[in-house]
Amino acid sequence: MMPDLGRYAMAVLAAYGATIVLIGGLVGLSLWRSARIRRQLEAVERRMPR
Image (cartoon, rainbow, N blue to C red; front, side, top):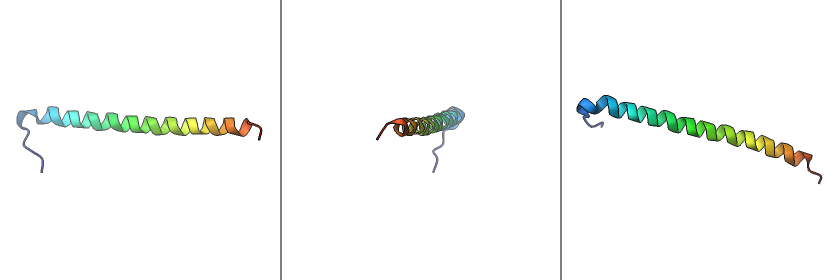
């Protein structure tokens, strides 16, 4: 299924690998920040009078 990349195989596969790692890092960072902000917002909402 994978095309023959010839002498560029290592460069192409390294680029794919780097892209996967970077996108995974961005997704992880986004999820971490989202959870942190949600906790902060819940704390602020608990302090507000009803």
